[in-house]
Amino acid sequence: MDIYHAIWEADQKGSGLLPITAAEIGDPNQGYVVVDLEACSPDHQVFKEVEIPDRKRHSYKLVERLFDNYTLSHYSREKNSSNESKEVKEFLQMAIDSPPVKLAKNYIEEKNKKCFTEMQWYTHLHDLWFRQYDCESGKDLSGFEHVFVGEQRKRRLEGHHFWYKYWLEDQSDLNNHHPDQIELKCEYFGEQKGAPFVVTFGYRLQAFDYQKRRFFRVGKNHCAFLVGISAEGLLALGTVRALKHKDVPEEIVINDATFKLELFMSPDGKSIRTFYPIDPESERPDSL
View 1 (cartoon, one colour):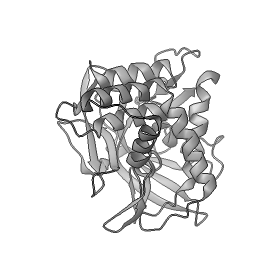
View 2 (view 1 turned 30 degrees about the vertical axis):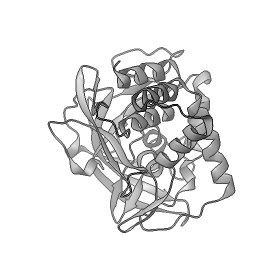
View 3 (view 1 turned 90 degrees about the horizontal axis):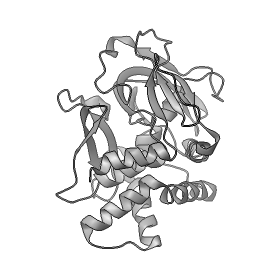
View 4 (view 1 turned 135 degrees about the vertical axis):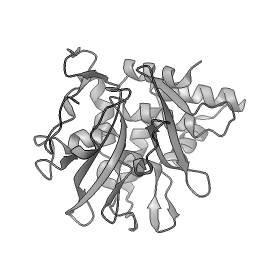
């Protein structure tokens, strides 16, 4: 079984949205993301239109509640609250019941020849994605914060690989803090392998720090996104990729293009540090 393809297909039947080009017509009942790569200007919107059916909205609402739980700075300690822990629990319980994460669990159990209890599986996912750890100058880091939310490291944006988070920051009518926080770097806007399912481009972001209640201007030259995947779908892919087993594939084939699912773990190997797709023929370190 191609586990990554199976997870992608399961996610499309669940909360995932189909990436389409600007020339295609989407199905509102399925949901879709219109990806426009025909031109570039600083205010150009790559994710031109997003349609989320009502039956899929629950996933996006739950993950969106987590975005303000983290300090922006890579160097700052987190101020964790009981309410934030409750939000994490509700998100993880939703993810555990989703088709993509069920597939990931079955695959991991098969490879490890062991079964998880309900509590063991919850703890495994929590430690992999939400456990906080220090790494060099970084304080209270987590895989979820890095991959889904993004971090500020001086003037650099790190992580920020969840397309939905990017799209929210690029929408003036949906953003509670600023009319438009994204400015494209068109010098890093080139031909896209695997588009519209996978896109990589550069941008500047007016990132809002929820602890300091102010914006910081950060930038990234090459950020990779799996477009249209739900939060639980991305979590399922990363969970499988993080499995320490010789048979776990490193590459995903999507839209007839092959991408390496790049993965780095925390220093103690217990949690994800970063996770994103990358063209193995043109690896770029600032996709971190």
